Image: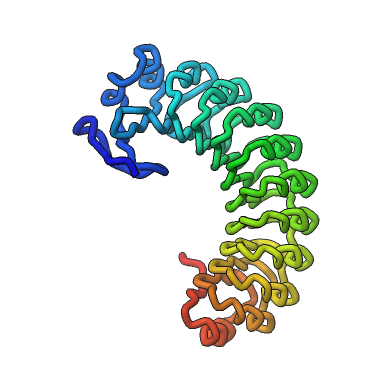
Length: 304
């Protein structure tokens, strides 16, 4: 981690993938090109610096941006992270970010980027995290991600991806964290995801996954975190968790499981947290499972 040095009294030391100083516009303006400083200050952008006064992160979540606002981003050639979530950025704006060859994290949740815009991402070879929740990205866009050699975390929650797009995604062997919640993904898509050797975290909340899809997940020995909340999993599906012995977190809320199937989870000895809220599981069933998994936190009630 970099040593931290406060640029002014208004700076707040924080952590964003590396040690940095987080400053308000008036503090960082002296370290940027005049035109860039004025533009970012006008739009309410937050810039984060390392101890050498090098801009390494741009956060525009609370700003008011447009594609035109990104015309000066090229002067920040050392940026490691850019967060543009909830901004009306289109493919034209995304194109202006493609000069940031050191970029590791790109947040585009709830923006207007499309499949076509992702075609240029191969120019960002250092990218490890890509956030595309609630966008219009679909299966065609997924094909472009194969060209990202270091991609580890991908968020596609609420996007337009389907089972067909998972065939392309299975080629991204570096993936460790994948969020497919609130998409049309089903059992067929999981058969291809089983080919991701490093996948440790998988979010399938509110998808079309059923018991049949769990067969594919058994081969994911690296899987530690799995969310199946609001899916069609039943007691019969719980028997298929026997091979997922490395699971540490499992969410089965709003599924059709009952006390009858619950003992099937007793073999998951590494489980640290289990959610069975809004199911047919009873307090007695939880108590019996707790005896088999004494170190596991079992959540069976929704906090009011």
